[in-house]
Length: 89
Image 1: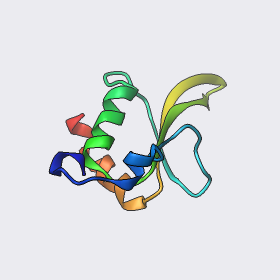
Image 2 (image 1 turned 180 degrees about the vertical axis):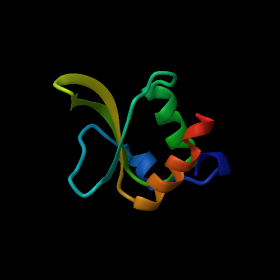
Image 3 (image 1 turned 60 degrees about the horizontal axis):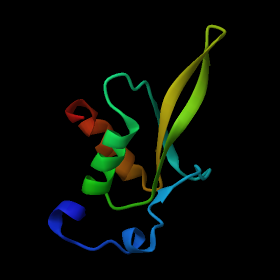
Image 4 (image 1 turned 30 degrees about the vertical axis):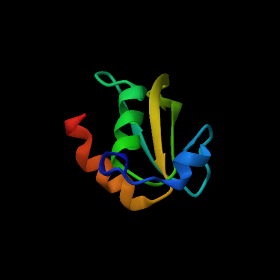
């Protein structure tokens, strides 16, 4: 983890944050009104180690489209840790 001074090989190779969501990633859809994608990404870079994806997703609710943020993790345990830490973001 970055805050402990450990070097992550995925960071060095630029392979940690993906620009697409692979089907085997565990996803969470958020309604982001108070926090930005950058703030979420910064928290993930600092506190987690695995590969992740952050991007917009359109959700249909009652016949209306709503823009949400999809956060996906390769390691399911990182999604659990992220979910527990959402109130701190």
